[in-house]
Amino acid sequence: MTIFKQTNTNKSVLFILVILISLSLKATASGYDLEKSVREFSLENGLRVLILERHLAPTVSFYITHKAGAVDEISGRTGTAHLLEHMMFKGTTTIGTKNFKEEKTTLNEITALGNAFDSERLKGDTADKKKLEKLKQQLEILQKREKKWIVENEIDRLYTENGGVSLNASTGQDLTTYYVSLPSNKLELWARIESDRMTNPVLREFYTERDVVIEERKQTTESIPARLLMEQFLASAFTAHPYRRPVIGWASDMRFLNINYTKEFLRYYYAPNNTVIAIVGDILPDVTINTIKKYFGAIPSRKLPPSHITEEPKQKGERRVELAYDANPRLTIGYHKPTLPSLDDYVFDVIDSILSGGRTSRLFKVLVEEKGIAESVNTANGIPGARFPNLFTIFATPRYPHTTGELEDAIYKELEKLKREPVTKKELEKIKNQLKANIIRGLNSNSGLASRLSYFEAVTGDFRYITSHIKIIEKITSEDIMRTAKKYLIRDNRTVAVLKRKKQ
Image 1 (cartoon, rainbow, N blue to C red):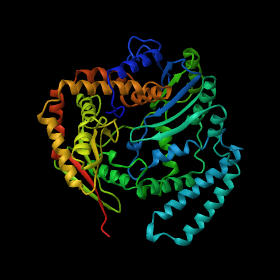
Image 2: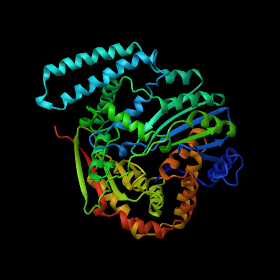
Image 3: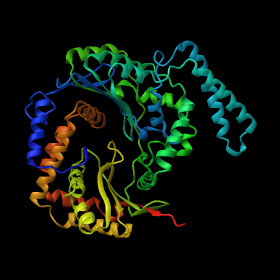
Image 4: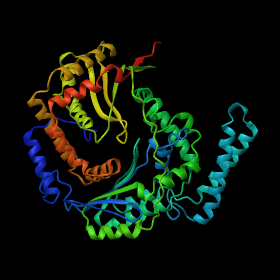
């Protein structure tokens, strides 16, 4: 899978970057050698921790990654992982409340009433409208009562008042991650807040936040043609595997997201034995380890749900989908491929860079500069996730008056060249340097390092993928590229999604 998007570089830039990263990693034997710099340990409850000491500035970046994403949701509950991410900023039994003991009574009433309201709504046309209206009014009254106990945005306030920056979270198909950067003397504050969030989270304002994410879907997906196209593309490319689902959820599921299932999802998938913590910055390793043991060690591990994910059947013919919208045409083409640690996944990283790694890449030079039929063209390896087999994907926008059909044919011609013509030694060396430089660049900040350490430890079970990735890339040959292109970049293995302007 692609770690970073490629940009132009040269050997001198690469050399400078290697020197910088080598210094920042305490002069290890190589800029790529993280093994000697990262301290890793696991608590008895299964929590995995990676720490890296870097005294470049008095700051520390903290990343908590749960192996919990949209792919782990049950059918009919899509959007749960994303909604839970929102809910985790609502606080705990001690944060975000004036008196949790009194608030809890109202919360229990809201849960019972909300479930009753949803159960009636699920009846559709046969629902009792008078009962629905009464339940809705009662729920609104309880939600107003709850507000008197709530301290809004207290987690954000605690971090901000203590110098925190970049406080945020992200949910994807594979993982959910929470992160923040703080002054180096705020380690214990972070540990207290985050261990409390893992142990005593409170899903307050659940139904209000559910309405928020429903509106978010309307604004960020349903009103944006490119995202609608992507949604339809994935739903066509994957017929059985849950990678076909949007992370934000299907609209019909989101209206009935359930607080009891959300709590169950939280209970199991946010367990310490399903979690990785990465800490990078101005720290004292022994102090950091003891602090983590103190605050996270008592959190009980959980028996994780069976990880049976429906396998995607082999595709045996081209799939096409069209989206009619009042917008400029767009084109998306995807090919099924294996995920890491397959050698073919590494080869696709190289193919990705050959085709769209900057302004000297093949697709840009031919389609944008020489033929002038494309406004933009990009590729991506590892769509939409990396825990399971995924897609190598091409995104392109035609330049008026050229059509998506012209652009599609031109792209296929370039893919055929990969099958027939060996990549020259000079081009392959340039691509490998690009990949290495971009990996190094991404490791040049505390947050960049913490992000990648937690990501690869969670997805692959070993952060060392970062270094082994470079070693394997070095060994890839032009023959590997031709073999991989011939095997996967074929008509019967592709899905094509086209955005066409809606006729007035």
